[in-house]
Image (tube, rainbow, N blue to C red):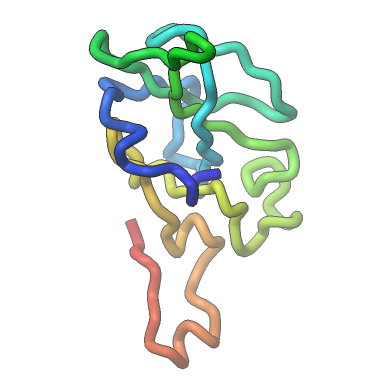
Length: 134
């Protein structure tokens, strides 16, 4: 889950590879996956599709126990907003979702009004709260 990613887990990222344009995507899901390499395109074993992934620098160390590397993978499921605009996530977003415009190497990213599906709720307005617009 995105909320469980700690900044220290991203320190060895050198760049992000996007497999498709993110301009039209309100959000992407991100997770830290255990992968056998630092840089190559990872195998994908989820429903939906992989949208991108992080590459690590040569100083990244593998896990002693498994020999794998923790790398971010960005993905979407078939019922996400880009595939079903009026579906489950017409408003709101999954907990591991972040606005792709807020992601960079070594930067976790965050939710925005766009990733949450539009303008702030009545409750947020009453409390004077807003999410970043990014």
